[in-house]
Image (cartoon, rainbow, N blue to C red; front, side, top):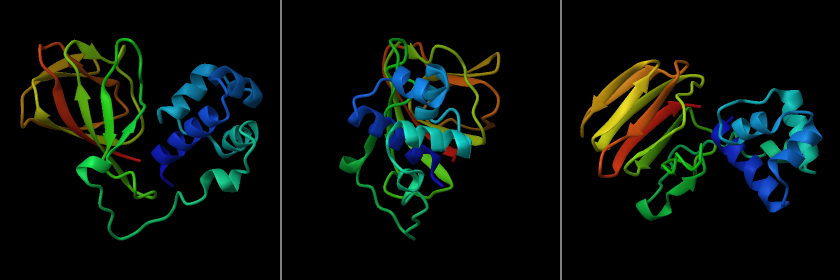
Length: 184
């Protein structure tokens, strides 16, 4: 099942129903922080928790996950058809994530093009399940992996265990663009 698509679907349904994170979280017996992590695909809900989310959004569980296993053999996403995905947005992090494979619902990888404005980074380094690959399309940009910071230039790449806290930091004067691929 495509967990990124599931997270986006949950967020979209909540917004369509004009519900706040707090309202849905309280209906599920979870915290606002937990639900935010689910919507930003930082946490994968258990099946019972997913059923509670569906109930809170007034949709059946089967309808919530419908089509998430569809797997066409080829999926084409043109440059103008990329989908901007909300992820970890805050005052400190205004990076733009463009999904490069959003049309394929069931996928083993999630490729994104991340544009990081000058002076922008996620507030803190965070882990997630799986492995991740980064390729700096245009830089420079810094990469924090646990407590270590690596300075990256255009063309540099990294492949790493994503369960270790990590983040991209653009402390430079121009935007950085990074190709990011992680397991779903």
